Every structure is written in structure tokens, then in C-alpha cells.
Length: 234
Image: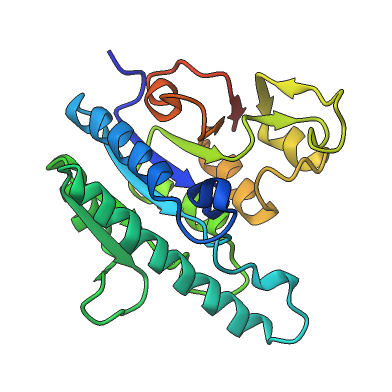
């Protein structure tokens, strides 16, 4: 029996890009779709938030107004969700893309009731567009939506396989945590999620599993409580 019944899966934009580092890697997205299909067929309800880093990292720009840069980032997540949603449909899943702002006929306006009803029908619900406001990252949007739909856990698939005490790309002796408290993540400045998202996690006791998206069957295994990643406790 699965450990979790309703999960919110966060996919980083960089992970969706795979070895391409930018844009989409269709093989990576297809592998994600097949794993999510296995979860849905096993009765697990799945919602998804994607980052936009495979297209836009506006915080590194000093020439564009922060509000406009964040709006571009929101649109990047819409593109990601529409694309990944179509890959999911290709493998036979029913999907719905919701945004906190109107996108014409591309998406639906977010509604908790409709999102939960869709999850209960076996649909995969994509939450695109972040919170709809500047100065909030997709980390914050992820935690917010997870709380709203009463998810059991956030599953955060990254290009790195967990939480380390330092950057393993720089420090070969970096130590990975099996379990760590959200307060320790903040106090040690480990960079897992931003402060606003961390506070939401703490106040609402929302746990998070950080795992490597590129590991075989990592989404399925993590949703069933078997993982080589890090449990961030709240």
C-alpha cells in the first residue's frame, strides 16, 4: 500500500530540461509521465507544480524591473505545465492546467474545489503561474497549493538527489541528510526552499521529500515511501 494518498509533485525547470540544460527534454518528460501514470493507476492522487528555470531566471537580471521579471517567470511555468500536461495526455492520463490568473483558453482559473474534485476523479492537476504575484517563488506556490489541496506531502524532484550540508558540485565531501528539520534548513542556509515557503511549511506542518528526478523510478518509489532522498520535516 502506498504511503501517501495525495501528493504534490514539484518539478524543477532544470530537471525537465534534462541534459539539454534549457528548454524541454522530451525523454525526461516522458519518463515522468509514465511514473505518474503508475501512481494514478495505483490510486494515488497527483498534483504538479513546475519551476521555470529552464526558460527564465529573472532574479539574475539587473536590467528588468523585478515585477516584470517575475511575470515572465510565471509565464515560463505556464509553458512548462502546458507542455508536460500534453506529454501526460499522450500516455493516457487526464489532465487539467490551472492558473491564478486568466490565460484565455490555455488554462482554467484556479479553484480549490475544482482541483480537489479533479484529483478525486483521477485527473492530474497542474498548478501553473506561481501565486500570480511577484516576489513569490514557485517554492512558495508549491507549498501554498499543497496546503490548499490538503496534500500528504510535497515531493520535490530536482537535478540533485537530496539535501546536503554544502554544494556537492563544489565540495566532494559534502554530506547528505536522510532527514532534516525545516528550521535547520533555514538556519543553516541550505537553500532548499526560500524563507517564505519554509515559514508556510512550518506553520502548516507540511513535510517535503527532496529526491533526484533522474534516478530510475524515483517518483514512484518516493511516493510509496521508498527513497534515497531527504525528508524535510516540518
